[in-house]
Image 1 (cartoon, rainbow, N blue to C red):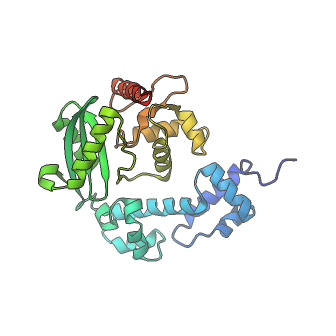
Image 2: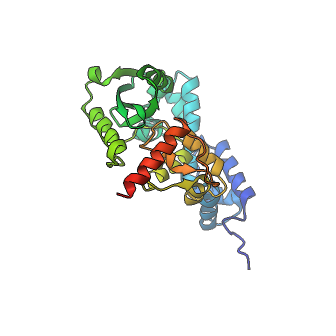
Image 3: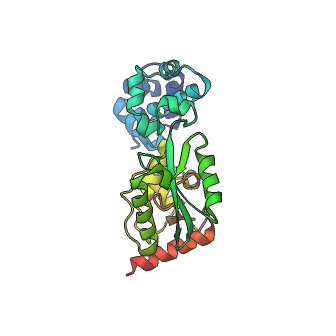
Length: 287
């Protein structure tokens, strides 16, 4: 007999709960209230919600609240008003989460990243010129290009309001070590997975990127396989978009994801470079 509250049986109820969250984000939103809106027990609502949306109700509330905050910060000069309008009980709660959710403080975000310092360095690698950018929290940019000027322009487009300086003048000892680790990885397959990242992403993007980091070097998965692995079967296109949004090549190894047909699919740094990366990783994995 089919269970009344099967996690896959209530998309309309879960949609109603999501709409309730968006309409009441400026006040406390509790699991019991959402379950009541969906007409389900809290236990089955929690299972259904996570199965259909991909995150817990609490995480969804956080994401909606953060989106409201970002919109408010962009359109208001009053940081405090934006914080409270987004439903945060106090400004301290926002600042506690600034590193993991905004990548910077609310005031800095409102100013487009003003006050954030990024140092950068370039290095020749087996797959071309690589530029690495980093804040004091971790790597925020790893890309490949034909020349340093082109890559620097990309870095500035990605972070238009940040203070950007070359490693020599920035005096960042961590960046030199991170560049060396990435170069060694490309040369001989040395480890790099423990390098710190400072990237901003949606909850879905972060789930995809975190999963990509778990795919062993030399192995490939399809966009559909990645979607299924993170609990979102049918979201292959969304996975592909998350890969295309990656600004930290290699550290977030989106080159290990291909189409279900076996074709390489897209790669923002060139299909030839993607093929070379895959071939090199497979060769090094066999050693």
